[in-house]
Image (cartoon, rainbow, N blue to C red; front, side, top):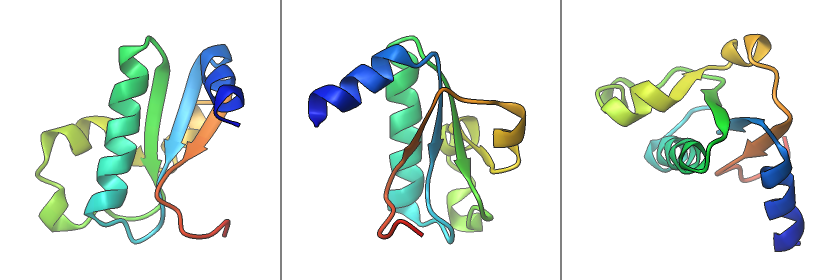
Length: 90
């Protein structure tokens, strides 16, 4: 399974990384870390959250740089979607 995931990432040019609604620190750090890591290997990446970022987390530069509103996904079609920190398929 890991090899299949790695191959999917290698074969994708553009990747969308999504976190869960009602984001908390670990969700936002998961999205941010994944975006930063994928960018380091040359991928075009957009991180999105379909909810407001809590005010106490909005001051982090990396989050502001890497995480966008979910509407951004409409304007940035992706070859691959990676969902992080989700506790259920819903």
